[in-house]
Structures are given as structure tokens and as C-alpha cells.
Length: 637
Image (cartoon, helix red, strand yellow):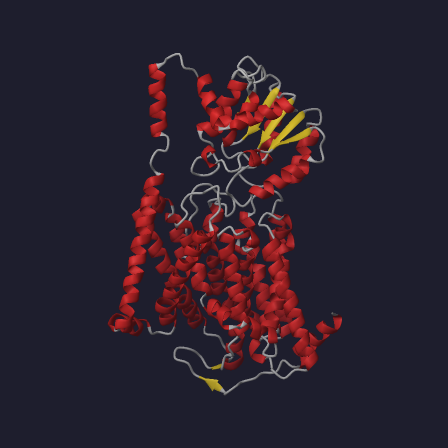
């Protein structure tokens, strides 16, 4: 491996000579530049990255680390933009910052505006209230400050209930556009005061180190990482590392003629880097603490190694990743990124317990690709090349395009109608008819009690029959005459759902629930209950539905309760942190003999009727079943 790296250094030092193929050219509206060499391998890497992001947002288990694709895009942007600026400086001895900005805006803004307009029209048709609630998201996205808007409004990327924002992915474009706005100026300053390549690289890497340290120091393990995930300051190191590579390894200075051992070294190192990247996408979880403690930095280093190999004309790996399917996707990666999230979110406005089926996934992918192709062919490329009017004049007057336009409009109308019907159905009160029947029964027979309703519940869910004796009556432990004295239930809004039912089964139990409560507040609640003399000898902790937690802090809490009998309740939430929370609860419980697990996740499997539309909170029937599960485990332990 040392020999491989030595050969790469030889390339950097000796083979890094300018190659100006076919001389210089003058492009309309642009400065004289060396004829750019197409980099098919980079498009292949773009394709892999955007596919990873799409798979992540589709909640595909094999791409649980698909969010890393955004980090790859950051490194790519840093490299390609800096490479372009340095090439312009080399040829013309100056950089036209205004022209650079205009090229970037023409490339990025039109497609995004088109997407925002279409999403706004969709929401206006299907859910006007939701559109009003997203006003700040739309405005901040247009001005490329969406990431800071989300930070200041404490909007979590990972831990949110209700319908997600269909434009929630635009935070990353804000970071990139902020970079495009500032970086040309900083590059010019750097070239003036640090003309030597080595000094400039050190300056850029110094800034990158500060940014990586900011992420590591600001992140609090076991808490929502959205602040460091969104921040320009805490994500800049990825872009800066790519920029540093552009200074050391400019694509326009790399020659094809290299020794066979160098070519082999490039391919071996590139293949190893690509394999590591794929493993990270498959194995990494957004709640892995190591990810924010230099894990993203490691990703950036792996990516920059891949880029160094793929941009070299002698690399065979670049030709492999430059195969037609990947380059086709790579060229449209921006379009795919822009359109994929609105399609996924607008077609799944409410959370569901079950994941998407294969047919649903394929249907969404078809729509994403169609919208991306339309955006790329009729908006992005024509505007970028200054041919927008000519393109649309041709489209409007050419017969072969008219059926395609009609089909697209028909598809749009169909999707809007489908979404409107779905939302209308979801907004109908689900329990109107059952409540009406129940009220009629109670009016006809005033002596009918809640005890009779529980019999209906037990019939629906035989699992709760374990709490009944052969005569159909609740045994002494769960009957209203039983006592809940000495038992404390601490939880979040789910605890509030079951409050009346658990008190019915265990009179005297102390229940302390609060909407949005995190595990990090458990110690505070325990201390308050202990001070009031309301902390029992048997404590049930139902926390984790609202996000991940620090296992170290949970262990500290359990250490202070070593003389108590404790029960940790697993969670079922259709959110990415569900498995992480449940694994953490079981892992910690294994280390404490006085701690038991109440596995609500297992008990509620395939029982979607227990949950409301958000897939988290409980229906009245679900609340009774939940309470019965708690009592059952208390009885057994």
C-alpha cells in the first residue's frame, strides 16, 4: 500500500503538466479556457450518490446510510468548482466572479423554481393549510438560506411527526449556493496572498479542520443531530476538502501517459475507495454517534480519493463508472435530486406503519424519472445554453412533441386527483360510525358498563385474554379493586393516550406523561417525583418515541434507581430512529438485573388498527391494549 501511495505522489509531482488539447476556445459569454475534458467517471459517482439519497428517502433498509450521498455531492462541488476557477485563473490571470455567479444561477435556480411552483400548485389543490404552514420554507429556499431557517426554527431533519415538508431536501442546495457565492472571492484572495500551491492547500485544509472540529464539538451524543447536520459551518469541511484536492490535483493538468504500475495503483485505490463508500451507505445509520464525530470527515476523505482516481484520464475505473446508464443518470443527478423528494412526500402525505411495497416504489420512481427528464431537457439545459425560447418554439410547433405534452398533463391531472381523493378520505372522521353505534347501545341499556366494552376489546385481541379468568371476569390483579400504589409510569404523549385505561386497571398508579418528552428529561422527572414522594418502587419508562437518546445518560439514570424494579418499553414509530431506540433499550437493559423490557414493538406487530393515522399514537382500542400489555408484564415480573 505504501508503494501505491508513493506512485500516486510521483504522478502529482512529476506528471502534473498542463495539457491544452486543441488549443484555446472562446465560448459565447465565457472567458478563454482550455478545452474541458469530459469526466465520465464523475457522472458515474454522481449517479451512485443520487440513487443512494433516493433509496434513503424511500426508507429502503439496504440504503440506511443513503444520506451520505449528500456529503459526496458536497465534496464533488468543492472539487469541480475550484478546478474550474483555477483553470480560468491559469489561462486568463483573473476570474470573472459575476459570470461565474450567473452561470451557477442559470444552472440551478430555474429548475428549483419550477419545482417549487409545481409543489405549491399541488398543495394549493390538495392541502391549502399545509401550503400556508410551509411559507417560510418556500421563501428561504428561493433565497438559498433554507438550512439556517430550519436551524433557527428548530426543525428536525430526523425527528418530526405529521407530513414532512416536500421541499425539506433543499437545505443542501442552500449550503452549496452559499459556497458558490463566497468561494470565488476567497479563491482570488488566496491566489493573491498565497500564490504557491502548497500554502493555498494548507489554508484550505486549515479551514476544513476548523469546520470538522465544529461538528464534533457541537454535537451532543444521543440527541437530535439536526443542528450540525444542517449547518454551513459544520458541513463546509466536505466542500473544502474537495477544493483542496482541486488545487493539488487539477483535472486539466493530468496526463494519460503513465506507467502500468501507476495505472494499476489508481484502479486498486479507487476500487477500494468505492467499496468503502458502498459499505458506508449500506451500514451507516443517521443516528450513529461516530458519524458526527469525524465520521462525515472520513466520508469526505474516502470521496476525495475516489475523485482523484476518477478524474485521471489513465484510470480504468473512471471508464467503468462512465458506462452509459450511470452517465445518463449522473448528468441528470441534479434534476433527480430536485424532484425525488416532493414526489415521495406528496404521494405519502401521512406516515404509515407498513413500508412501501415494490409496486408503490416503482410507481414513484417512474414519476421521478419522468419529471427529471422533462426538467433537464426543457428547462435546465435550454436555459444553461441560452436556447430556452428556441427549444420551446420547436416543442410547440413540432407534432411529435404534442402527444408527449398531452400525456404529461394527463398524468399531472391524474396525480392531483388521486392525491385530492386520498386526502379527502383521510380527513373523514374514522370513528364516527362506531361512536354512533356505541352511543345507541348505551342509551338502550344504561346498565352497560366499560367492563362490557373491555369484553369486546378482548374478543378483538385474544392476547389480552391472558388477563381474564375462565368466567370472563378480570382477575384480582387487573380488576378495579387492584392497586397501582407503588407503581409509577413515566412517558410521553403515548403515556397520555393510555392514562385513563391504566388507571382503570391499576387504581393509585402515578402517571406522568408529557407531549414531546425525550429520554434526556427522564432524570429530571424522576427527581421531581422523588421530591414529591410519588416515585414508586416499580417504575415503567416509556420514552423513545420522539427520537434517539444517549445510552450513557440512560445508564446514569438506571444507576440512581438500582433499588427499584424498572421496566423499559420499546417503541413503534414509522420513523428512522425506531430500530436504533429499541436496540439501545435492549442493550442497556441487558446490563441491569433489575431492568425488564416490555416489548411494545413486538406486541403491536401487524396490528395497524391500534394506531391513528400518524402510525404512532393510539386509538381508544389501541390504548386499552397498550395498558393491558403493561399490566400483563407487571403481573409476570
